Length: 488
Picture 1 (cartoon, rainbow, N blue to C red):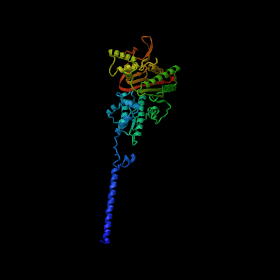
Picture 2: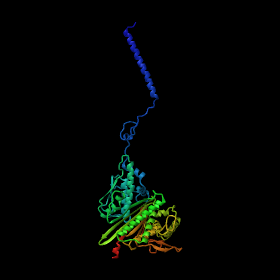
Picture 3: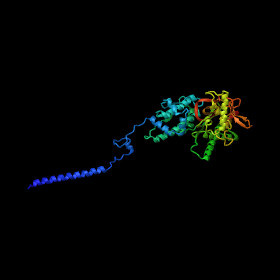
Picture 4: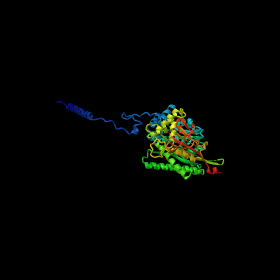
């Protein structure tokens, strides 16, 4: 019989075997549970933490930041506002972005304004400056862009307005992109100016220029009467009655502005001429809306009073413009509704070709058709009434009514710019009354001594330009002498 010590050893051995058996049984149960269980990854941490630092294999890796110029290019392609988009995408436009990109400008953010900044009087120097501006804003990698006015002595109003239209849409783009950019960086540069010392330039810019139109700063000057830039977006308003009401409001404000300018030099228009002026301005504003591809119309006025050597006078400036098909492109399009007028223009082109009156780069079909479009009764839309097609010829007459006389002076002139055509109204030629074959009277302005539209116009007044304007612009500059001084 075994002793007590042997029994204890046997009992301990049995307990150890039982414990191992129990452990193996529990291990088999755990393994079964693991086999039947779907293993899920741990929950993802918030994105703000995940995008910057994480070692967990389930987190997204941090993306490498794109070059600034690439980010700008993507924003420009997606979010460029309507007017800036149109002028930078139109093929013949001097502001075409693809064309500017090929120039590979390196402005370093400094836009040097020429002595005479005018796309009308000095286009060969002024258009490249506008191209440089678009390059500096949209293509180059600049922290800031500044206008350097050190050499500038004169800024023509329509040129300043082109700059401001670009800047207005540019700031819209900048605001949109800053709200989208993840790190809220200023991908696009800020804009400013340096060396703005010239008093006349300072008055123009701080009365109706960029600081005013961007809502940054405005200064009132006692010798300046301003009519700030008005931008009418026809696309936003579809109600015909509201559109007409807005046109009436703009017409009234423009007419009152002209009256105030004339009052400064002790002059006034008769009631008949005032009514005529309001009607004409209204028609021009309607035309600017109808012919705008972007359905935007821009208008602005600026008057500066002068007293020199006892002479009291003022210089009145007015600009109305739109972006879209040019006058020639409207009539040349197969979609032009008024094919009767198109037929007349084609016949006129045939006659000019037979007479060898066209000359490349000087007077081309575009110039002829644009001139013909100014005559009374000529319109690209179908006649709704006999009054349609009278707008511009009456505007010319009102222009001559406001100025002192039809005599030519070195200051007073009006320009019509559309595409590559420039037509200059300086008083050398006036509106003439003529009679059609059916005995009906109508008004014409042919810019020649024969007063016949089938004869070639004066090449000094109707000319072809190598610089294309993507729309139509009217720019008037009128010298107004003091009526009291004239009587003395």
